[in-house]
Length: 394
Image 1 (cartoon, rainbow, N blue to C red):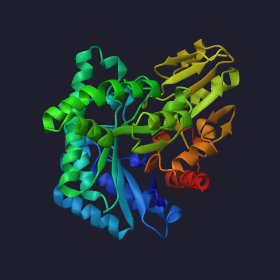
Image 2: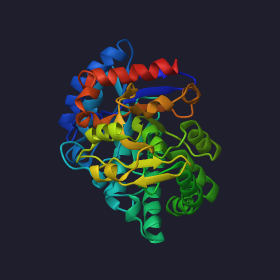
Image 3: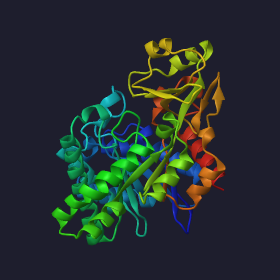
Image 4: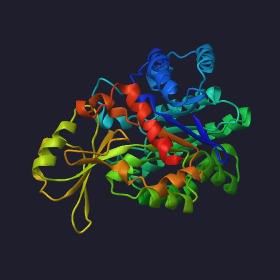
């Protein structure tokens, strides 16, 4: 939903919280829970959607179905302005873990899939509304072994930027691609993200784009800056003990765009016998839950996943944060807190200033949350999150 003008600001939630491995499942999610969320949060105005389009959804999608989908949304007072193209394959009911990063940006598959998502979003966007597509943070860090691996990914990214340029030239619709930093990935924190953009994307990447488009060097760098930016996920950065206000300020200072901010909350606690036992309730076999600890001296140490062996090995008194998306409204229970309590008035003032045009609440882990952290059903929980955001923005 559009919650502010001048600058425009659109708020939604990510439909990856619902099963959506096919186009039919996505339609069902819109007809069912998304319609109920709209009735609760935006009954009298159009309600924007953040959809997920996995490769399976796109495989058999026909052009006429897109037109029917847009008509379907119009009749319900809905529109699409952002797409989560991070998960390529299945995202529910199966082991996801590191598979969520595959194929990565070294591959033709990732580029071709993203280009198709860009074109589809261009067809769905209302006039006068820009679009955003969030994607993997280039690759899982362990998979990038050489400079050649990195350069292959940059070349593929520039191919996708070329698609964004072509779309805007042909239709006037602007769609940006947003790399989403995440712990244990090639882009995992603000420092590394800024370095990658400045030392690679805005330089050699812009050179590659110039070569495939015929642009001069200044125009190609401007195009990279226009169509390629960061999806700022507040859970991911909180796990790394990063301050969201500082992070957004740093990206703005470096001229790196933020097409989308995903508002999400990680679990944080101070380790003790009691909290260690509570954390065991968040161990699951579906998603990665990268974990970081911080000691009294401020030293941060990172771990690949949350499991019992890790919890048993860590001493009491350490601060611990783990990548488990809990609802934004969750504050504290049994010594566990949500990192959303660190999203200050200053942070929401930045959001209102137009630092990003799109805000998306993302709590895709609803199905694996401990039962006592579910507030009613999924639609009720999502509506509660969106109202939480609206209250703070106002």
